[in-house]
Amino acid sequence: MDSFLAFVENGALSTFIRETPSVFVYPAIITLHTLGMGFLAGGSIAIDLRILGLAPRMALAPMAKFFPVLWLALAVNAVSGILLLIAYPTKALTNPLFYAKLVLIAVAVVVLRRIRTRIFDDPQVDQTPLEREDRMLALVSIASWLAAIAAGRLLAYTYRWELLGIPAIM
Amino acid sequence: MEPWEVFVRSTDLHFFVIRHPWLWPLCETLHYIGLSLLIGTVGLFDLRALGLAKGIAPGAIHRLIPWGIAGFIGNVLTGIVFFFGYPEQYAYNNAFYFKAAFMGVAGLNILAFYGTSAFREVKMLPPHADVPLRIKIIAATSLSMWIGVLICGRLLTFYRPPFFH
Image (cartoon, rainbow over the protein chains, first blue to last red):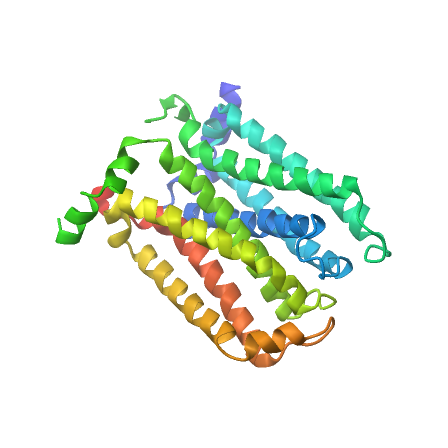
């Protein structure tokens, strides 16, 4: 494990992201990660709220057009997340909460895809009432996004190692 | 220390923030949830006004906006906690000035939407209707200002005054 962490951490890309003082490197990556979170988690929660019966006059079918925005945000966050992980592999991978965050995001994305196919692939979606399972999916979606956001934010307070051999100062 | 800093640092709220280390991460988490609600509801409404998902009647998707407002109110409250905890971090920070400026423009833009006939016009539009150009400009301004607020907020920590590090 340590030799793998050392391999990544001493690599050129990791060092570049961590040590370049420009606002267009590390700060830009972490900002894109937050922006993507806003659109992905926020957009997903907005769709969930509609499924749960808020804004009932809003037709569901055309909301499918919002999904490409969410998938784009997911792609931005996958790329920016991997870059942040490359910059600080030890910090993330030695923190159990990081794995919890990944699981929560996986659950949220699987549920979002399930909502996409189950509800929005149905051409009769606005003619038939939503079922109990639809509302359950929306609730699980909201809960997993909120938990993923909390886990992500708390990573900054729970890591034990900043870099290999350098403990967190907290 | 300026007089206002002495005042802020003498308040009960200031002492509460610095004496309870769990409060900061909690408020940050709420702040991120609040911004997600704001971007997720107001952002989707703006995108509809700009022509995405036109099958939705603008007045119908507007019913989600109160959730964005709730997120914003949560962020004002948590923001006050941050400011009273460590006021210098914000008061001497260019990113914070830009964040405040973007929020000011977003606020004027809200007045331009709800304080004129724009909102009443949009509320009446049926599904598939094109939103008038004037209101598309308001939507584009809203979307870009809130994104600007988010970017400056995230960059705050990188522009803290040197004595803070």
